Image 1 (spheres, helix red, strand yellow):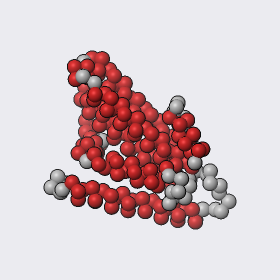
Image 2 (cartoon, one colour):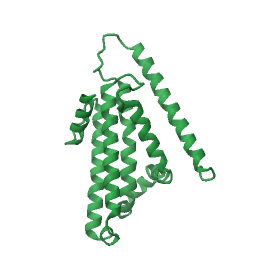
Image 3 (cartoon, rainbow, N blue to C red):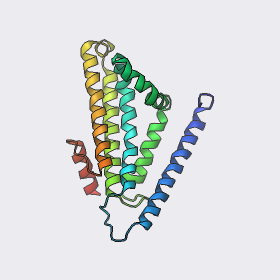
Image 4 (cartoon, rainbow, N blue to C red):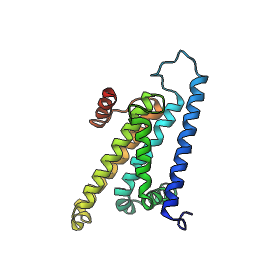
Length: 204
């Protein structure tokens, strides 16, 4: 659908789309906040907090699928591969062909949630999950760059595929665990990563 458009136009459309989505979410949040009881504390986790906390995890998931999933998923059973092709593969292909989109989303999330002077009202649960998703994205990017820097002979060998498979399941398990905890309205406790997010939040 976007193949005939120039890259700069795709980037502009992506920025506008993300901006409209953020504004819409913010307006929904304000409406929910006004409609809710005044006795609710800031630590109260609403349904909007849970839904908003799930969305940022698409970033590390797509990054992990790009770095590791494309190499090992063809070796998985056909039923799993067919499900992947019908669900996540179109998103991964769009993500791969538009690398600038990841950085745009990254900076939008950073501007809206990580900065101390954020334009969005402070919601600790959403902020925790956004920071954690950004950290997972950076870790996945670093692991992917490191893996691609290895010799091609090692990457296609048995040990290379084992390493790639391990990294893939690390990405999948951490993202799935974080999403499940976000839906439950609980804070994820990933060793080191969640602690680093807590320290970052406490320091601001």
